[in-house]
Image (cartoon, rainbow, N blue to C red; front, top):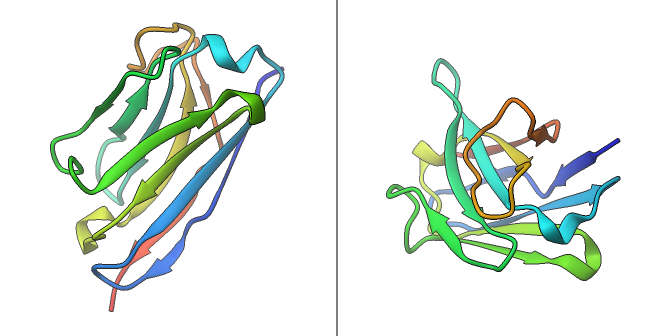
Length: 122
């Protein structure tokens, strides 16, 4: 059974930084694409950043240049470094494991973490 556990969320002032971590277990982590999604109150869950099994990364336009996704297959972990945070980044952030190695769009057969709250406010 796949388990994904996020950590690193919290309250940060605008312009600040946070690093989210996702620890995975129960699968051959390295062969799957991974992603971070977020959901703000009253809004749909949206893709923030994804990374394929070969390390190719993609980002939502709203976070390009500010966020960086990375993975450490030896540690079964994926990270999201978030810089220059804005109040609009406030959301619950979810780690997602794709059933594919090359795509990270949400799938019914993908696996989700429980989420971690990120609040950007002064």
